[in-house]
Length: 359
Image (cartoon, rainbow, N blue to C red; front, side, top):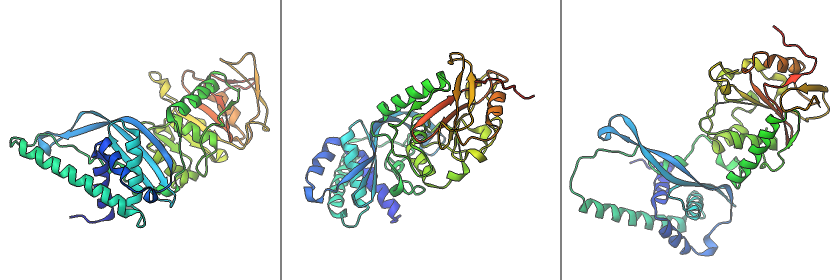
């Protein structure tokens, strides 16, 4: 039997994941108030869907059985321990309590009351399983759930104690930022305010963090600036966005750049193709300020005549690259430039006044 700390955590997270919400909250009320820790929400409880998978004959090929509703939550206790939960169902309070209990069980000084609570729930669940087996007619197993309900919350690769918060109201905050990103692309050259974005991890500005939380997910391949790889920003992205990272700029749906001077040229990224021009890379470049640099005039859709922009800290030849980027429209990358709290859109449709694309 595996007696490692991860195996123990897997067991108690599985118990908390499967516990009836009302029973879990009832058991939580038996914990003395003095034994309940203070905590902050690292990721507020949110509801989503996960795919349940089975195996043919219990051991054969995997197949998708169907989706189930789950609620997940992440908290940080006052002593620094991080608690996670993934629970079936839609009860956000139960998910929050389960995350707090996970944190308590990892702390030697808080473990005792949480251990007693989880042991009681585990005994009840075991009793129900035995009763179900007694009632069921003997039969050969056909389907096998491919992942334990508690395993998804355990991560050995990320130092969760150092992960900063994400959105506190994900749907509302993401909608507000997305609206401003649409305005930035639809109205090139006009600066949009993203100051409501959450506190960023080291290496990101607030604007970059807000864009990442809004646009990235488990299906969006990301090219991350080498300066950030292996650091706090990468861990933050893995935790909040679960996005896959790629080494090849051509394979990226999004690119996050913080060292503008050393960034690859725009044509090193995916420009899309004739069938799917929308699959090109969107590049977000972080710079010191959106003003104070070389002033250029932009033309194109969404601009009434011309508009002057002067972002500082971009590569010396960036405006020639922008001119070249639109030479084979509809192909080309889309560019967003951010400083601490603002974003400026430079889509592939924009033209630099007086500049000619090179052959």
